[in-house]
Length: 230
Image (tube, rainbow, N blue to C red; front, side, top):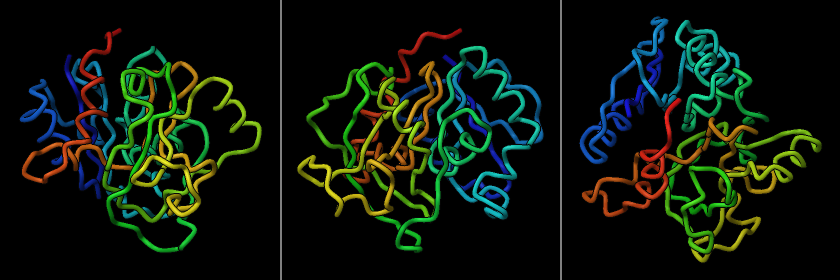
């Protein structure tokens, strides 16, 4: 399977994602500059973190209109796989590929630390093989990570098993104290109804190399390698 990583002015996690997929996961991976209109035959698109266009207006609001995003949206609508990480998650909500939005953290501050998350969805391919009783330590680094959606949308997410991850403590407990950015239902990631588009605020690519003494991120990314292509 061939992976493509979109790169916008202000992206700063594209190198991390590229390194992990090429050197640790041993995949065929290319970068896709935001002005390109072709996905170069990629089966799986990753929209990485960073501060696309300086996060002017709203995080992801400008990047959503870059030429490459037309191809990404078309790819997703055909059933192709897309993963948005942090700023990439914000971009995918702006593009209408994922429900809800990401608001400023409830603390009104940028948060950079290790967080704990646990899988929720048992039907999404990204989480179906994960241990629902285990929590995973994954770094976060964002100012606009507070997941918000209407009451009806939240009910739909629950009804259709679309919540990928929730923030928890080191023991796997879903507590208000562990919900550091104030997300509704402690949501750290969601998928679309068709479950081919994924978005999460934590950075699994920053927890894959053994040199970092944390490889929990591999558990989140390795399931993607077995996804069937369209």
